[in-house]
Image 1 (tube, rainbow, N blue to C red):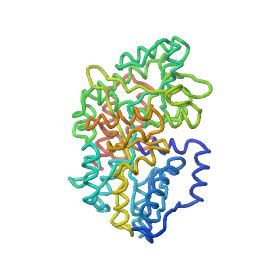
Image 2: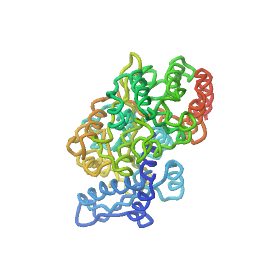
Image 3: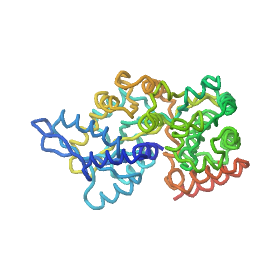
Image 4: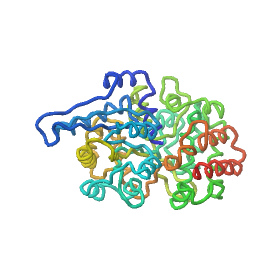
Length: 441
């Protein structure tokens, strides 16, 4: 999930937290002023970002302030954005804009009647600058509420070029070839994959990429909406495919037990840290930030990626996540807030964060030269080129009780499957049981 990946990335080091405290001064940050169209107005923005992500988003806020004169304040909500925003609305202190990290939360906000539809200008920008899939994910019952400003490309497998060179293997283009390459890497002295099984969300991402490629986009959409059951044969097939990796001790760094004791930052460290234990780690484009910022890796030189490969006869998957900007009806500066969303819809706004790093934009009008390195450009190009074949993280579309709760639902059940992948059909039945309850509630 985007909210989990990005916030974990932003807060996984004490340095990042220290920088956040410095940037925030212990509270909301602000900028702006001068004789501009929105001088004298203040926009309150809430979102999950902290640390380096908050610092980089502040650059976007500052650029808007410079352009319009509006003051801006950003408040980090932590992961539980819906609870925090709900309490602020009830307390009469609603933010003007919320950067929503889940489709399910955006839908919840809309159904609660909290959101203003996007302005005509913003909608025109979305129609012109974005693939229609992003408009669909930002809409509820045909009304466009959310503008997707930041995206994640979650179909990237990151590797150490030295490890693959040492083993004499090339980046694979099929899932079977990836496992075969993994065995060759293992025979050269390193485990093939570092898997962050301690964080259940990483396992949902493994499943989603396999399922999208193997079952296809129509089945993916149906399962995401719980229009087919998790006991469907396509789910059992995807779990069986995933189980081939999970049960192969030669492929997992530390075996199943080691994987279950490895969190996301630790999984990146096992590939790109000072004492490598594996040659590859699957996760989104944000792996690059950890490899670069924590371990000094040069992206594209001693840390690189290949697209998550096609499974069987399917197409290579492109799974994404993202943060959508929405305007709250109860905010005190709604007109200025909507102008801020109109600004976020422009390539100009995206370029500010792209140049700062740690960012991908679904805006197809953003010049790829805005990104700071060739690897990020390739990742962004792949995301935009996928167009309407992009599928949003499935667990982010589910009720939080099923797709986004530590120690429960899909997270826990896939951790149980990693621990013992011998019964895909039984795991599918447990997933359906948990999903049925969550969607009913």
